[in-house]
Image 1 (cartoon, rainbow, N blue to C red):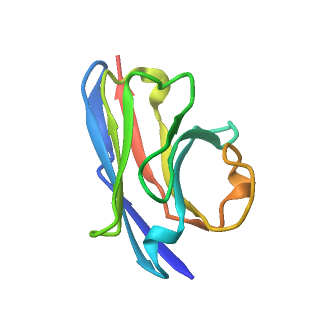
Image 2: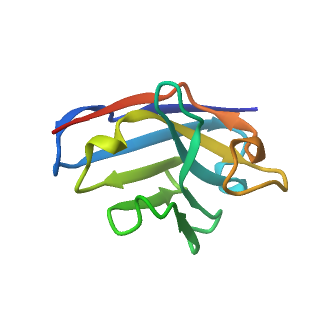
Image 3: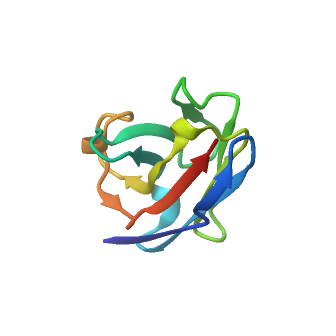
Length: 124
């Protein structure tokens, strides 16, 4: 079992930046691929980004590539999502997730553990 707690969400203007953090506890953090997903009201939960166990491989949705950066600090059991040049369409609840089993990297069904989510709202 892994517990994930997100923080760093809030209300910002378009063009501004936020950094989300996800603190993990429980089983060995370095054993998991970590991902970020987001969900707007009435929409499906969509993939945003993921980082491999070693921090050597990163993955991004086309909609955030070049603006968002994912990273992890295994010594602190924490994964980050730096979000720059935010747009109103980035508004959503952002979820941190951990994947320990073989599954789809880009699908919520591929992940085993989830945080409670943190709200990000971007106004124009």
